[in-house]
Length: 337
Image 1 (cartoon, rainbow, N blue to C red):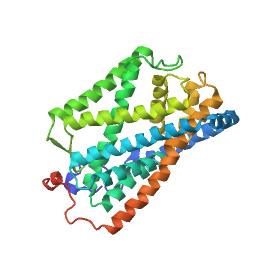
Image 2: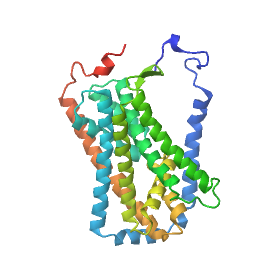
Image 3: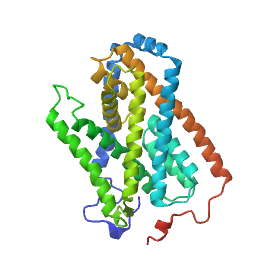
Image 4: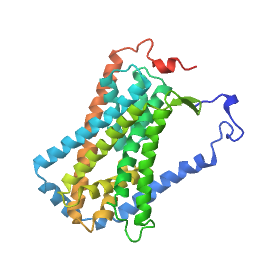
């Protein structure tokens, strides 16, 4: 992102010289990913793979079909996140195309990482639709906020209700976990209030004008996201055969998701499996647990990637046969100096 010389402060690093943190992060994150991957591989021989394969073979076809339908509904619901961004920015890309771009990006995001799916894929497809970087950044920001606000609300509710009991060796106690849950709920509520009382207000962030959505859209964001995370938990709950309470299953899924985000491994490969083994190995037989996780990965990650690839090819073909509108920009941005 380019900045004028007049906008640089004394604390900004000279042009062409990345900050110390950026230089360290370039090496630390891949090293962390390799360390985690090595740890997972070193324990791979301890996994009951034969039991996992046997568990996979025992799944009824109707159950797998039902879980696949839930996974499809979750991906379709995620596509609505960008429709919220469309309403917020008021861009002119048709609703069906906006939804298809979001679904495609989500499928690639899950399997190839956020830089490829969540950012690069969206940037390309929206650019082909005629939107500029500023509008795309707003859409991506709204989508990220939607996803993690719902995450925080659900996780906070589970923590505050005392559904999750931290292990004895954990550094956080039950009371501290409840307090953390209340804080997460308050943050979600604070976002809605900020949207309600900051309507029309804009901020300058790294040379870009940013404004919050309306309170109505903020509530829609929370509703869509919590429903999406709940569907993901429901899919895993069914695959576990009800051996683990739904709230516990959802809690472990939320924990695995955040670990997968901070661990730079594409698709969180091995992270999902490791977290479930660590937290539920004493409750569910290891073979059945691994079978459920592998089935979940196939139905929620891999099969939607095939659909995402088909959608991507269709979107590219549509973009090639439909020239851009002469004025594709959004009304609100057109008024921004």
